[in-house]
Image (cartoon, rainbow, N blue to C red; front, side, top):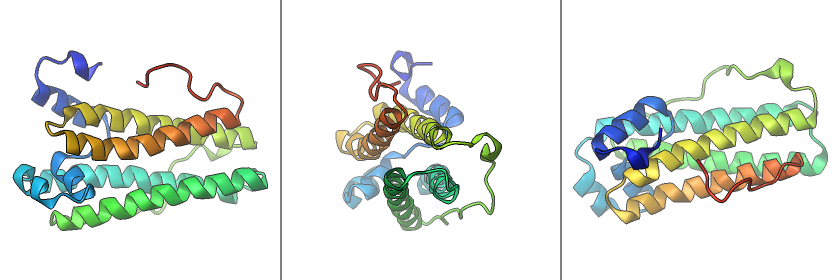
Length: 189
């Protein structure tokens, strides 16, 4: 469903939050962007924002674990392993920033799960690992993309779009690595 076609922004936000695990609230993004004054004006619901950020944090922690799985699989050649490690460091940075923001909002950041349900039995080659990582990055792009148009202040949308941009770059590079067209269309959905 397209959020651009939704007649009511509040309904669109609720729908998005119900369908996606990865979204940043206005107050949280303001804090991420280093704009605490904006966050104070828009941060009436710190507990709800912290809960939304915790969902995003959970997704980032899952990405860190997925890249660790790929690194430990012994399926990645040296240059690809270096790339996976670099992408994992980006997700760690996202997770660290999200956790600090949750704490600033008075929340308690979620911890990484002890075990994730990854399709380990389907990862038999480097290409399998890269396609798995690409699917995770594509999901992150879609989730952050759904959040960006819901912000009333451009500064908040810009902060969320910054993380979206990083996820989109990961996705494009991974597509390129498996021989797919890195940017398959003029628009991301």
